[in-house]
Image: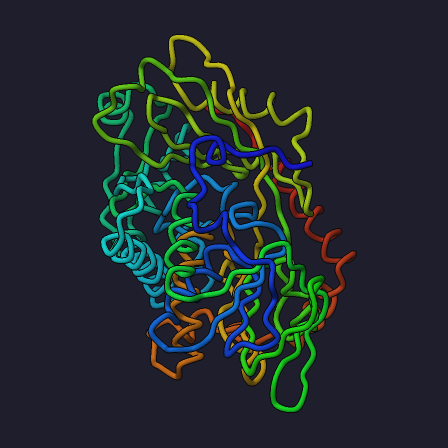
Length: 436
């Protein structure tokens, strides 16, 4: 059983969500499967279209992947920019960087139009290294980031220690333009506004099958059947089942996250930072109000949909915390849970049409808040036949080798999971935590 997150304990569910109907209408203009960030963002971006929009949620709003994430809004992809440069060239690096900045700005613009408290604020990030080899890598990464248009600064050990005495490390890249948020409050805000504007949200409504039927789509659920000319699949769990091999598979991953008790050294920080380090299975953290540390680590990574905390998770995360932070004493853990996310082979999500009037969005590679919100905007532009600068970057067919032998091999779930586990084992072997 999945443990509740820190956000569940500190976020109130809007009254409008407590009065949802269990009634499933028989028809809609647009059906959205999944009431996470991308699904509710799509509903938000469709609100002025005059369409009857119905959102189907298998669980309850606020109990999917969004409410279990860290709430870090970053303009830095899961893979270093220098690796993207080697694989795809500088133009691709620039577009990926611009799209992430665009997504954060879009969230900020949305928040300025409503009065829900989401604890949103702009923050810098720190990418920390520990050895001479790390410093060499960070210096190269710093150059690529500047070429991509990011506002970054290289810090040596003295500068890092003077500015951030509570962080261990020998060097770091400080990058502006990131942000942090309470992800559950953000999700509740989208749901509350969508419902107020006429969107119908049906909870505990699991989609069992989607079938094409004379120019429209029939969606079969645990609450009955609903039909619509347009359907959008906005949850990773349904993507592979619905897409039937028309996109590269999204691999499910889970990791553990902790939140500590308040730490006195961190309680009065003038500003916060998003933090991660240069290990193969990197650690990441943010400082919450009252000086609590929220931290996750790739050391707890599992391939699959494991959402129950393992006995080893707490030990691994406490070790990572002690390695990352320079504190007078080790804080106790107050919350621990597992989060899940989908990854793709090129670190880009799939957002757009896979068939006439059938759309999907998923595979955010740990950037579900930024790319999920952007997905709603992108899908609305497809559905309403409007141009958007990032339609092609994230289109489901952005990979050209879909029919390659390697793709056919990885399209088989058991073989894909085996290949992923081999990759993760290789990363664990490379993850030498030696700071000499």
